[in-house]
Amino acid sequence: MVHRSSVPMHWRLYESRYNLVGNKCLVCGEFFYPSKIVCPNCRRRGILKRVVFSGKGKIYSYTIIRNAPRGFEKYAPYVVAIIELDEGPRVMGWIVDSKISDIKIGQRVSVVFRKIYEDGKEGLIHYGFKFRVIDENNQLRD
Ligand SMILES: [Zn+2]
Image (cartoon, rainbow, N blue to C red; front, side, top):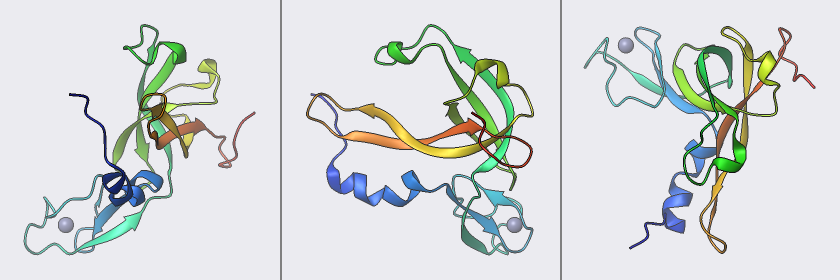
């Protein structure tokens, strides 16, 4: 049986797919992505508050995918990076619309929302976040 995500599930996940949403502990100040139920630093004393991240950060580490997995061949070569958000958490994402020569450790990036894949010819189009290279003034590069 083919596994497909249902439309109601898609809508339930809408917010976290279109925003980089996590939370912050108001006691110790640490940000979390994905959201934590309990602050690992403060335990029961922690007070967690939902936050939408700026989506800006820098490349912490990256890899160039030349031999893509099935279904992703047409995108190769592409870059998958670990991004350290300005607020602190690290997230994994594709780097898109950027020259591979511009991609380096410490490079500033900004989140963009893009199609991830289509679920069959008639199926759902899945969107999610990816990242683009930006300059030191947080402007997109051509
Ligand atoms: Zn805390």
